[in-house]
Length: 299
Image 1 (cartoon, one colour):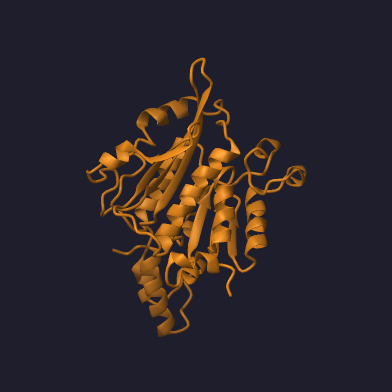
Image 2: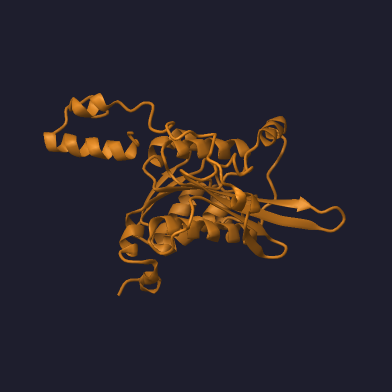
């Protein structure tokens, strides 16, 4: 008996597919802490966790796994998430990078799916562009609280799956030039956006569902991409009208604009590794060459 028997409905060999998969989580301050926990329970076997920050007192209202002890010890968020994942699944392999995600690009290239928990538009735009270049499905989560005049507040958010053949974050309006300009104008003085744990949890669960759909044969969507809109006041989740009506092709990322600009096939054919040292054997050279083709999206 396996600890994952109750999710065998996900399809043939789904347990092995999940165990073999590598998922990258960029930003761990709120929604992605839920995602990390749920993916560990689902059986994802490999994680790449990226966040430069330490836990603070203001994180305790939304950071799953966060405790007063970690705040007092000023623990890195990536370390907290790693301990939580391994407590659920000791066999998981967890890489952590306490740095900006742009400095961990080589690790992200190895991921089958990347889930973003970023709270600024510029970073969302850059990560979407990175994933488009390397043909990696990117799942973005966004949540905010809007004041409704004298009638309280609206808690709202969205989860967007951006992948080849689907609208990108710019197509869907998650990233706009106006938002980038406004964010740049407020840089350094904007402060953190309001966050609450329950709405983060809803969005994270939707994101995890999309990850599982991408990896297992459980349920195939009829079209690439997704845009799920959440109204926290009513509790409703619906497919965004803008996505439902979208029928054009993405003009922001041409199909030919893929691959690693630094990839040099001559290294592999000449029998040298990345350090300029000879390979052990021809068989090893061939194996690494084909792995390079997969990882670097040689087209």
